[in-house]
Image (cartoon, rainbow, N blue to C red; front, side):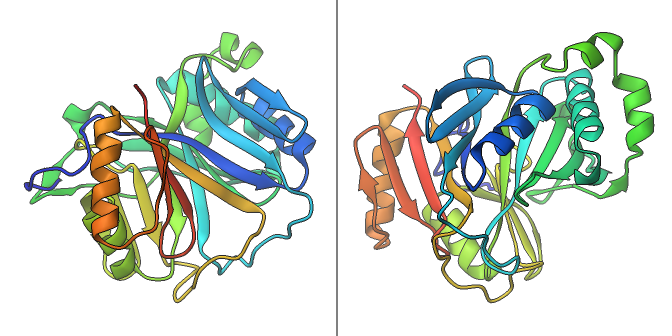
Length: 289
């Protein structure tokens, strides 16, 4: 957690992640029926899903596009944050029951408990719950996170209720963080910390970087585990856009000034600003008021 004056407001949060998809019906079924998100808006070519009035996933039909290489820059996973362990257990059980071959692992990260899946088109999905911030540990500005074995069956035994099995769409859920594949970590740090304005919360040499606003463990992460040396993305299925929410239009204006200072090309409508990161991942920062 940086001791310098923060560049992004403390209550900055992640908005929905937009995915370009080849099979809109199949992807809608996955996020609606398995992850137990509700359809909030639907057109012939797009579906927005979330909980309550909070969107998490926007699916845009792009059947003309092909899948990118796993070594290209792009999305590593979208992480959906649940407000209770019961709600997380309900979603995990729902996905595991309906798409049993999509589970890729689970971990206790000390700050959170997380379960990992892959959606029908190969996009990574994390479903997680945060421990209270009073239980997080910081040392010299770095958040302590780990990868401790988390037994999924025991977790479900402890937290899954009969009511949740019958109606898994319980509690609140929203995008808690977004994890990207990038070509190199120094460029990611320059862009996401120095320019966009997140605080660095953890780093693992040349392989991974975690950043946040307001002392969260991470709103975004970047890694090179599969994508070391990757260049700018071409148009492909997968990640379409990452949304970041800031409190006011003043925050958007300050970001536009900062990006202009660094020579980053932006598209600005007063309430939101969009720009590409060094790997052509599209980022939109939008004011919530």
